[in-house]
Length: 296
Image (cartoon, rainbow, N blue to C red):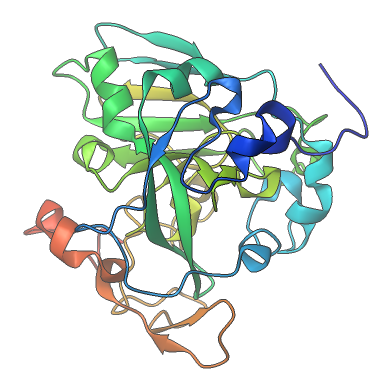
């Protein structure tokens, strides 16, 4: 259903003000689900977070436009309701769940991740969500599930960027099953104590913080467990530039620019890019013995 000229939903639209003003309590999109305080632990970052206005106004989201500013400018045209997520493929118990049902099913946690994008800029964002592994386990993957495919919404009425015929819509991404089951791999439903804005991938998106940003697919409607490596949007269009793994690796340059340095949004000077975006201690063991120049 197309609803024209509707502004983007916020927590204030679906939750009592007394709750959504409390940053220690997540608003649950009418589900009333609470979330835990920011997790400092092994996945917390001891870094200043990116200003919310920057994180919501400078985005890559082709479905809402090609420039960095276009997604925020066009987000009012995107109504993320109704919304269901289908989980199927090599599973014993395929699922189809409404977004509210997902929020009721999982205890949400606020964690701070550093999300890198391929243009050598980065942000530190307090995501709200739950590990993808928690959802995958509910579907009981079979022994044939070696990879996970993700598919975003295909609806050019709500996502006007999809009228561009140069791209093979819908947007698709994929992970190896162990990457998908890693506790750092998040399904995010909010940020900065509020619901995800349209330009940031409402109402549910993937966050894989040790990989370049295009791997973290937005506005997900389908998750499929598969036996063979799935095709991805950028991997199909430009395989020499965007490999399946796309781990942050300063030693491997993009064919058109160096990836040795990154610029944190809000800062003037560039900083050294860290292998696996600073999460090597947590994820490097998954790639032991692999040539990460070949498997870029």
